[in-house]
Length: 259
Image (cartoon, rainbow, N blue to C red; front, side, top):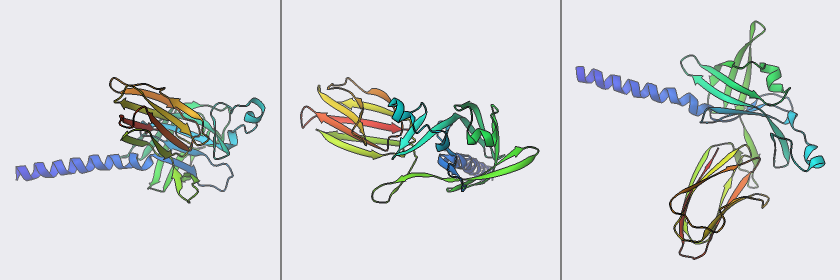
């Protein structure tokens, strides 16, 4: 009986641990305010417990035309402009269903997000609904409670009609000789981390975006073990990895992590 009870407690503990992880996994990704408003807020929850908030209403669409560069924190995804307006840290307690945004770095003096939820250092929501496609955020305001729905948000459609969502990706590649590999992105990814291992004395790896712009290159080189590189992303919707080998028999492997 004692052994059976211990087994039951172990199964219960494992199931509780699994359930406590479920809300975090469901929260991850990109969510858009469910509204008829032309410029809805978009919030992205990442697995490293950072969050990013975007809104097209804060984008300076004339900056590129007048200065040749986008305003800091602005990105362009398939011709559409948007702007990062806030970032910080998120936590979620499944027992109380409380979502907390803290260490808020508010990047714009005014935004729809801060106008709705304020500019306090800590912002608390009570989640009254959380599933794969919808979240119901409720918060206290002026002595009452207000609630907003956010829906799972896709960024754009590919030519074949595929919806591209924000997601964190880990891609492992192994091969020989010169090759090309492609990844489609949502445009909201901000980091590319590459771990690279060449097995010959002269190989090259490049990362090129959808416009043919080179984002990263190792130069013709060999490795003595794994080398790591960090590349900043801003609005890219496709990456093309080009491996150029000095010999068709050259062996290589690399891992691309996208956040």
